[in-house]
Structure formats: C-alpha cells, structure tokens
Amino acid sequence: DDLDPERLIQCPYNKHHRIRAGRFPYHLVKCRKSYPEVAKELATCPFNARHLVRRADLSDHIMKCNDKGILEQDIVNQSCGFQREQMNAVSTWQAPPCEEDWESESSEQSDSPFIW
Image (tube, rainbow, N blue to C red; front, top):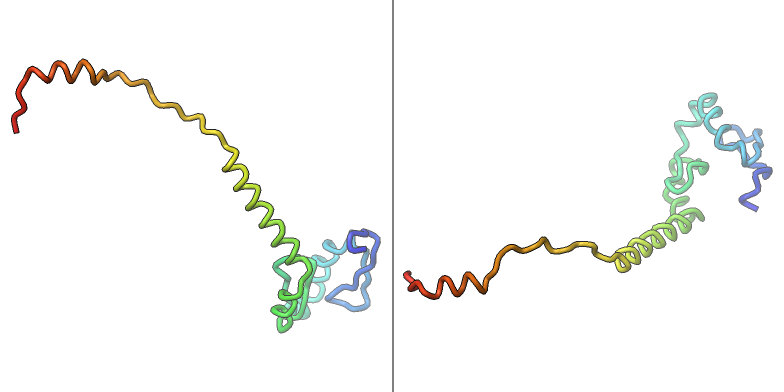
C-alpha cells in the first residue's frame, strides 16, 4: 500500500538506507546534504518531490509517473468546480437609481425648433 507510513522505501542517495515512508521526506533533505555529488546527478519529479531519478531518466519518469494522473485529475476537478461556480453564481448587481425623466424632457424640448 503506497499510503502506509510504515512501508520501507530505499533512499536514492544511498542504496543501503531503507526508510519508513512517513520519515522519507525528512531523510531526503538530510541525505541530500550528506551526498552532494549524488544529488547533482538526480532530478526531482515535478509531480512528486519524493521521486528522485537520474537526470537522464527524468523525461521517461515524467511520462510514466503515477502521480501525474492524480495531478491532472485534480486540475480537471478544479476546472469543473470553477465552471460550476460560475454557472451557479447569481449576480447581485443592481442598476443605480435614475433621476432622469425622459418624458418631461421630451415635452419641454418639443416646443423649441431643431437647429442643425
């Protein structure tokens, strides 16, 4: 189970390190400082910061990353939610009160001739 915090994960910096999933992000920070040469060779997945792969393999990883689908689904859901909110939004705009009376103005002006 990917969500099990007790699951053991192999460290990308040192293959002998096996870390509980719940502690893995903290371990990555620590090992990155301890192994700067290895860190230069690794790239971080844009979909999950816990995925560290060799720079040469990053584009392949991005194409196959399981977390990409989750992120794309979140984007679709947010987009649909935004559209639904826009459709359900009720305008509270009200026209300002009008003090003009066109009927009285037109009767006042009808007595004077139109001059171009």
